[in-house]
Amino acid sequence: MVTFPVTLLLWSLIVIFLVFWIPALFVPKKLMSVLQKIMKNEEIIRLWGFFIFIIALLFFMVRYMFHGAWYIIFSILGVLALIKGFALIWYPKFSEMWGKIFYSQKILTIIVGAFLLLLSVYFILIIIK
Image (cartoon, rainbow, N blue to C red; front, top):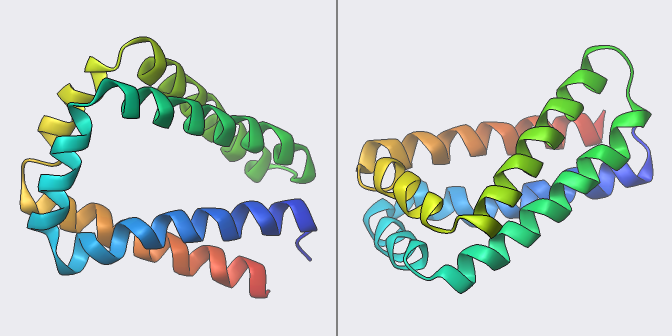
C-alpha cells in the first residue's frame, strides 16, 4: 500500500506529465515554439529552477518510505533534480543550450511525450495497486 505523501507526489508528477505529454504528442510544433520562447527568458528559467529544487526536496523526503532499489532510485532522482535546479538558477543559459538540442527536432519532442505518457500510466498503476 502506498502512503499519503507518496500518493501526493505521484499524483503531482502525473499532472505535470499530463501538461507536457498531451501537447507533445498532438501538437509538437506548437509546443516546440512555446518552449523555445520560454528558454530565452531568464526569469522564467530561474523560477523553474526553484520549482525543480522543491521537487528534489520532495524526492528526498519520500525516499525513506521505500526499501531496496526504490530507495536508490528516489535518491538518484532527487540528486539529479537538485543538480538541475541549481544549474537553472545559477546558469539560465544552460537551459537554452539543452532546449536547442531537445526541442528543435519534432521526433524528440514526440518521444519525450510518449515516455512521459508511459511513466504517467505506470505511476497510476502504482497508486491503484
